[in-house]
Amino acid sequence: MFRWRTFFSGFDAALVLPVLGLTLMGLVTMYSHVGDNAFFNKQIVWIVAAFFVMAIAAIPDYRSLRTGNTIFYFFLGTVASLILVLFIGEITLGAQSRFNFGFFSLQPSDPAKVVLILVLAKYFAKRHEQIGDFKHIIISGIYAVCIFGLVFIQPDFGSAAILFLVWFGMVLVSGIKLRHLLTVFMLGVITFATMWQFVFFDYQKARIMTFLNPLADIQGSGYNAYQSTVAIGSGGLLGKGVGYGTQSKLLFLPEYETDFIFAAYAEEWGLLGVILLFVLFSIVVWRLLYHANNSATNFERLFASGVAILFVAHFFIHIGMNIGLLPVTGTTIPFLSYGGSHLITELVAVGMVMGMSRYTQKRYEATDLLEV
Image (cartoon, rainbow, N blue to C red):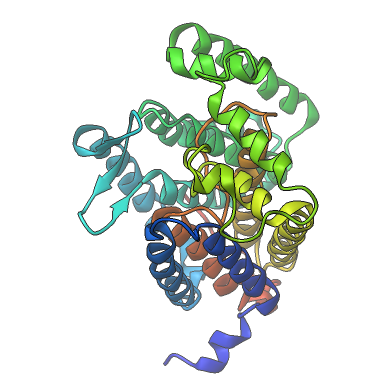
């Protein structure tokens, strides 16, 4: 029988309240005093739905995921959806990456990130005593490549980069040896060089070259990055005020509600608002790492760590892209950017971490057999 007392024992207000604050900060950044507020109105619905789903995700007993093949079936379903979207998915901004159901769109690469975290958490949890064996890094890489490759050819370079960082970060957390780290780094360099020569599209190469010299073509490939830096710089200390961002609301800044919402936020909230953003996000990461450190088993520890890695990767790639330090890859920022697919995925991950935390008192139970 479900007990509310058991449910609330895992509720973490110190985690949920900063997440709520970040979503509301993103929401008001979408508000405009000129024109309509379609994104603002739709995002309200997505926020309500996402927090409801988060509460549902905090209920199950996730200890059952340590055994059996449930996670592997999730993995197969994810791979199947990523293949299917290549055939019947909607093409948006040159990428065939989402299913259009009319009243909403689903981008399977978003839940795929959480599924990858689950797969890696289970794999490494079973083999934590043998993690020094390099073959486990290769096998975990194969799992990651199955998802990474399908996302990359959509093409969705931003999500593919996030998936790689999730895998790489979880490999580090699992306890990789330094010599293996250097080997992985060299393999990454070789892989990137090969992809540059044979895989990258011309527009992806242009984005990377724009990163090296963003002002070389401000009317072409460097336009978005240039307008983003202008928006951030014009915010000053206190910002222009909510709804009064000229770069974003007058559409000089493209995709201000998604890929460049940090620039739009910085223009309206200023430096002090940016500091507040970093503080709230730091609290979210701190609470996730707290749950990781106090987890019942290695599986829960690795999952919470993986969620933290996912959020940090999204956060810094998005900001780096907005301030001209990284190529424009089209990535969202956790909790702020418009859209239901990524927001629901992020809050489901938060809910799962809280659900797992209900069993921290069982840390010293006999370790279950795990298999992927």
